[in-house]
Image: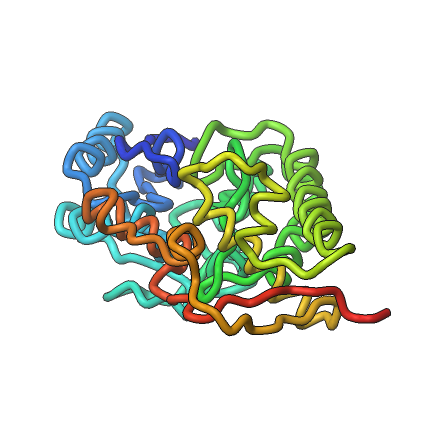
Length: 305
């Protein structure tokens, strides 16, 4: 009933590529969840997969609007005439609103549409009860962990989304994530994700026990001092945790009255477009929120209990 087709867009952010899913909804009707990037080869693969199964694509659904998941939609619409459905907050052009936290019928199946903020605020997860399957986009991946970065993402909403999936969909068996392999033990994967965020937050707090630190200092303390191409992603993850801890009243930020060093600037405000091509730069910028420039360097310290 579910066919995985992986786009040929591997990268540090997309892992082995973006996953698209073709669902057989009965009666010769098909649904595409996440058409993927605007890569002609991938769009053709989706059309060929539907044709080989005698399925007419009747709807296209987006888990969220990041370009590696959504930018292939116009070509697929042109080829099929199928409407595109997305979260009511989506900024993707020409989409229909999904019914949040309700059943959404497509052909002979009904998908539960779950409002799933955190990775982005326009994110949904789909649940196919008859298959006990969750389609999680970038909320839960088949390997690794998801990037949570402001301004389009936030840590506490993300943690609440994970907990909701664990609490309300404990019978789920399979997770079809936006990247990586299919997950066959949904309950265990959700528990791992919840624990990972809790443990990372404790690591960040531990780095602040003795003295205040900047985000680059926290990144080196938590992830290791060796320079990494993923430092900007790590920095934005740390920022998301620190914003949540500030809102909780556990941490406060104090501006430092000095310019950033070159290393600090490279970590906090990377010039993505100078490092990769425009298509990949668009994906990385959307994932990391680097359109939001961090102009002030802050030191973070624990508040008094």
